[in-house]
Length: 508
Ligand code: NAD
Image (cartoon, rainbow, N blue to C red):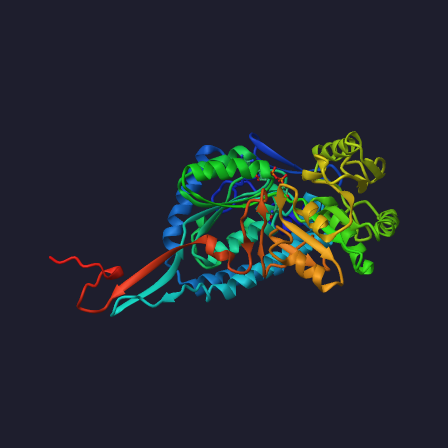
């Protein structure tokens, strides 16, 4: 581990990077980062004080004054260099993501790949920040719109995607001409420091102000400074719906902009016309991958009554083959959940299933003994439930899959939509009418709706996000960049008359 931290330049760092805030190894006000893999303390990180925070804001504000004037394609060139730097550090950073967060090594490396991919996307975007031009109703007038940089973007991120989600925001924000202040999850501070170090080297090599990329460390209290600060033009917050409600209200009260990416309660519908050879692996990966801690994890499975028993049998068999253990060992399918609080939430959800009258088909179990010393390894479970159970309508961030039956597709869609969240959804069917109904206006109400692929994971090219209590924000691909810019409509009169709009006369 020492070697890994050293290769990412975060070993015994005492001066902090960039803004001097993420200093490491001091004696007070420390945030401790424990690995859920083996329960060991990886490092202690200084938390940002209010004084530090004010310095960061001043540094970022100055950097913005410079960066907004740099031509967008040139900003893209800097992001291209960042992609190169992440390619160089992919292996070490991927391992750290896996060790600090507990996801599999493949997924840790996959997160770094997502950073590289969004960098590439942003580089292309830097030459395509297009506005429309319109025909004016007045003679000798020209009308068009342009997109300007917004200002300081505050990025608050969750533990489960400790680096990818930050990059979705930061890379777009940078090509848009904004500067960023990142408040990562207090559960994964080290991966953030590693990213900050990689970025700062690129900035330094290009003589760019360090305030372009700022990092502040701490829990929700540090996040609240950002959220309440009028100097932050956009707050992009990823995390629980509880957090999003608090953040959304506070930002709205100061008339700021927020982009919220919150909890999901994602369902797969398996129709009687499904190809079970692809449906079953999709469900298992979606439900147990990242130990059920993806915002897009499959939590509910809505199965047609004609294939219900068959699906149930296949799932139980597949779950019986799962290997649980150290996520850095590629033989294992399921790693730990993030901490003991998550284990408690998992156990109490199983209890609630029973209290509401459901059956634990594969019951909850906390694994003990050698290799499970962190106390964070749990058995993925399956519960047979009624769609109306209270527990089924909540997001429990753990590997619990709720199984339910349906008769008609209308009923299945009704069940799928009848939860407060609206992030990801999928149907498995080979029937064209069913697939099209699911994707139509009377179909899934989620931000993501898939056919014959599961709910979990997404490519960076599409806009990512969800409806209802998932917050309504969109990040990453498509035209999500517009959230990071301000739109301006311009009208230019190149004639010698002053005609008023709508033919109004004003004679003086
Ligand atoms: P969390 O809500 O506990 O914390 C997320 C972040 O918000 C942390 O950095 C935390 O310090 C900060 N925070 C919490 N309260 C705050 C407040 N009042 N003001 C400012 N900052 C505050 O979430 P978590 O446990 O880290 O992550 C899991 C949750 O994130 C799940 O609900 C998951 O679905 C969601 N998530 C959503 C997406 C998405 O794109 N929709 C992606 C990843 C995770």
